[in-house]
Image (tube, rainbow, N blue to C red; front, side, top):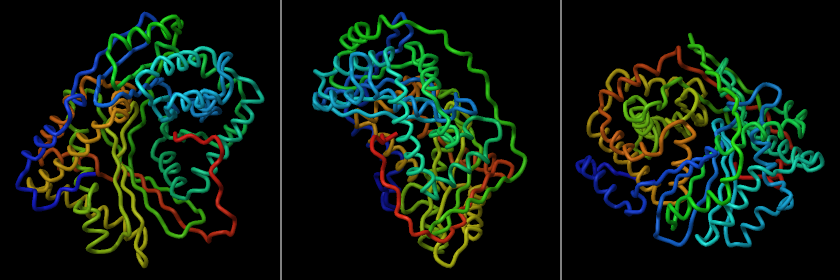
Length: 462
């Protein structure tokens, strides 16, 4: 993270252009796009600074596509994708990549499931061959599935059930959304995991894992035509599938503050707040999501941001605060605020203080000097993130999965730079209202003496 001190404010937007100029040319190069006859989209971005390549296969299916009774099946299938095919025995996929000098992993979200390998450019054919094989030939033995389900359930215990703040986040979503599937946890409810069957995961695989529901993203020291040739060789013969019709899933308008309290063993109380907000649907015409990104920077992101300066350093109401907003999602958007009250303070004190900071922006807006400093910070983070081939591949795939063309990434910096102080104040006025607000509180209970759960074997960084 690049910290912009007060002494640099006078540089204003000129500093932003300086940062953009520092970005190496390969990271700013245009990507090439192709679509195979079976519907597989292939996006290739050249970056010749090192002889490495990142290959990612993105499936546009995640927890928001699931139904009650089989929540968590997308994540379960992610685990099963490493359990082997007829050609590649269970557990060998990652070993083969490691033996080739690379690394691999996978991750599941509300919107998608993605798999990646990072390796020497000469090993790209190996990665594509392995991915194409498990796109169509995955094994679903009941014994293998039963063993993996134990890993998944232990993962839920370790990452959610034994983590009080994770429980608060889970309950916040379940309370914020009444109808939209974003209310369900990506890892699934434990009761659904306990009753999951191999047939559930296999049915999910047969339904959604198809070339016409996937995007192959390759970034690195490659030539687009060569990647296209490899993609055609390994994926071209895989048959397209008729995908289920995705029906609109609209969340009813909220009409008042919602709240939930979570009791769990913990040392300190914790507060999370969420406001319904806009997300990008048209990257070229929308402006509110860009203003919300800047607003998040006003509130959080560095030591001089408002929440940290006012609530942590000056009034010492909070020992920590945070803000999170993602403008690129398939479903409805949320603007999150969180914090841990300082000793002697309550979550009510912290909530009141956070609301007070939001009200200041609603009433008084932000000054141009502060706005320029925040823009420099936000855009610096955006620019320097693109210096990584992995980050470039992740950003391209993430935008594609959200229904936003990777081509519009080129205008992102300009859109952030164009946000005005009036627009920041306008989105604060529009979205920071009680009718959009949900509050989740951790009520700490006495800590028990049981040992913390160990990280389960086979756990992936998803």
